[in-house]
Structures are given as C-alpha cells and as structure tokens.
Image (cartoon, rainbow, N blue to C red):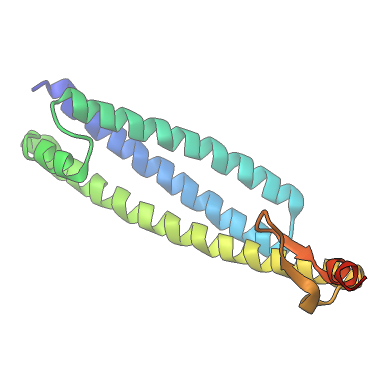
Length: 161
C-alpha cells in the first residue's frame, strides 16, 4: 500500500478536524445571533455554515475515496482495518485526530440541535403573536392537508350554512 495514501488520509483527517472546529465556532455565533434576534447576523452565519458544510462534504468524500483506493470500505470497519496498516509514525496521530473528529461531530450535532430548539421556540412565539394580531383563537387552529397549520373557523361557519 502506498505511503502517499496514508499521508493523504492523515492530512484529510486533520483538515476535517479543523473544518469541524470552524463549524463549531459558527454554531456558537449562530446561537448568539438567534438569542439576539439579529437577522443580518443570522444571514451571515447561515452563509458561513453553508460554505463550511460544503467543505466538510468534500473532505468526507475525499477521505472515503482514499480509503477505497487503499482497498478498504469507507466505513468505521474499513477505517479500523486501514489504521492497522498505517506506519507507526502516522498511526498515533491519525487515531488521535480520528477520535477528535468523532468528538467534534458529536459536539456539532448537540450545538445544532440546541440552535434548532431556539429557532423552533422563536417560530412558535411568532406564530402565536401573528394569530393574536389576526384575531385567531388557538382553538381554531388545525392542520391543513399539507400538514401546515390552518384556521378552521371559516370552514366551520360554511359547514353550518
């Protein structure tokens, strides 16, 4: 097996760690702008997050391709077999980076979930305020055929007619 593939995989894994670290920073910024209700800041963090996610996708694809070229499946099992074949000079660093990458993925998922909860809560608050301004009672809200919320008060009056 080529030492180039080992070095390439090590480099890609390190780059993945850096990308996930950057994504974590953007998610912290996103959390802040969500709490502040800063629309322009949210637009910017969304663009930054999108760009990073594209880079992460490319990094994952390249790592998977490297594993495939080395003759292993692009999976956890494939990585374990691949790492057993790494030269001792690279093995510890790659395994350390791999563990860091897995931990960062977990951290990013948690931060993303937290931000999603804030966004969902804010949307619910806006929906309630909008319904109040429109004079709708929450008891008149049902789901429409598309799964969205609808106001059935008008339908009820048509049905009485």
